Image (cartoon, rainbow, N blue to C red; front, side, top):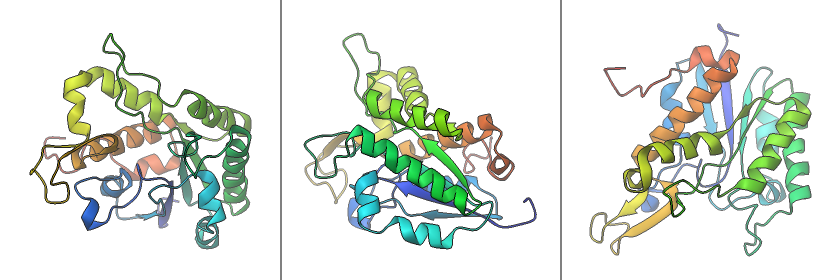
Length: 235
């Protein structure tokens, strides 16, 4: 595999997706993730804002991924933010969410490629003691259960991001998310305090967490991605 090109397909929601110029500086972690990979790796980001496992499938967004899959490619699957909210049109009941994850896994393996499941990134929410809340408990656990039952590599991005939130604290973690003062950016003239979506800095930190998870899993892909921010000359 080291002498062959590798494609990593990313499927998921807005926390992973590429952003339109009108949405900047909001950034999905899939954008800087490509910077961590060497020249043998191509990252194809199929994630889209506002999607759940159900709507990603219903809109036909999965079929082009399967069509283009080559043996030994990777498919990184990260959903949950929209699936888990009953008031959203994208809501996916727990049993259907589980079945959809199993579909992604089985059809990826049918093509000889490698599925990797990721729990959703934590929302920035702290309890009264300053500890990060478990904002995705049920749906993160469903992802973990599918990973165990189907023997799928798991990057527990929920746990890793909550650990980072705990380290930075309520104030320090502001920089990870799309927080802007009025007049700070023309796309958000009234300012914004978004505790779900990332700043450019936050997206890079989350991408680092994913790369660390790849390394800890000892995936073959790990030899093609580097720990540490590739823009940091000191790393």
